[in-house]
Length: 154
Image 1 (cartoon, rainbow, N blue to C red):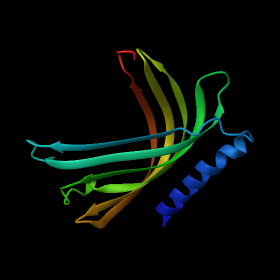
Image 2 (cartoon, rainbow, N blue to C red):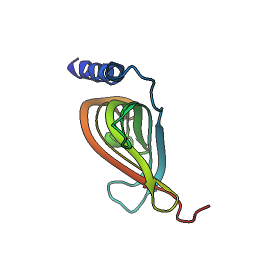
Image 3 (tube, rainbow, N blue to C red):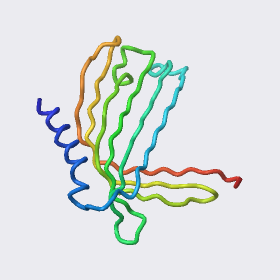
């Protein structure tokens, strides 16, 4: 009960705080997603197929002065599925919601970069033998960085 209340409070704060800070229109609606399907062999503990995925939708609410830093709130979903049903830590899915300060900018070549610092609430449901096994609700303080591009300019 307490964990669900924490997630509801964090979600409410994430969605209601920005309008209280500014009555202006959102600056942008950034999204991100990734998915990886992998197969590992030769490992005692991690043999097999695994799918990792994540999707996030955010709202940039305000810019900090004339900088590239933006105040952002977001919701997302993340999950991992493996063919090893007994490894519940590799079989989980759940929602996320949070707020962050994010920076988008250029990188060498024809690239892009993104940095952010923030906090999120997340709730994972773990599965074993395709049945719910356990759940975990937590708050996560994070620092993220990504860079990408193409060294051969097109």
